[in-house]
Length: 353
Image 1: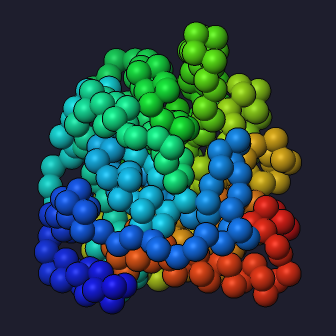
Image 2 (image 1 turned 30 degrees about the vertical axis):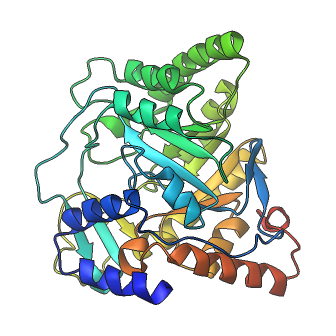
């Protein structure tokens, strides 16, 4: 069955990347995706800020922008699924073409611009999910491009989706919305986390729910920025950091004809830089924040490297463009074998070692 999905993935490479992605979502909605029938591996089970994960391999935001297929992706074998990025109001994003495969580099460049259908259908789909689910489903929050008060957009997303998802991610690191990354500066981040914290406390008091809140950051950060962001996040009660989003950097090693396209680079070339920044956050956090490793994960060894750099769980997306959704099962098998070979009985034992 894995060979079937790999063949389909190769066929999709004959199509425009964005059209291929939309077709994939439609196929998953029709129940045509892979189904994980393997027995759970106790060594891969772990927890993340109170969330129970059957395995630490999650689906990153960007794949399911409108919360259309969280259940099919959980059935495919992901330990958790992050939907979005969602903004309060629908927006079309940037002009096409805006998604490019760098096949020779096993990479992707996108300048999508938070294209999504807005909070209303997103919320309705999440609230319609029949629980319990096999793994957590999170919401990745963004701000509308034309918003006068972008922080208010994040607060709106948090309050509207409260009780509809298992965790929140505040996306302040997409390079494709002008000015958005300015929210990573210390002063802006203090205001953002302060207002989110105020809204969160009000919702906790009203509902007795308290889902974790993560912040997703860029890989293009220096050591001083990492330390400042860490202290702000800890002081504000943020639960964790997702390291990282796509990068604006263009390594000299890139050989694809699309290497000079504008937008965020993801995939294999991001593995090294994002893992180095992850390790900086590990050193700065000193156990005070949970970390999730994203960027370039395409194998069990990649996932293991993220764990050793401090991540309690990992996320992937771009690698599926080359290997299909069945990739998650291979990564899980490889990770379990690597943990065993290194003498670890569980994921948690390997984190930050």
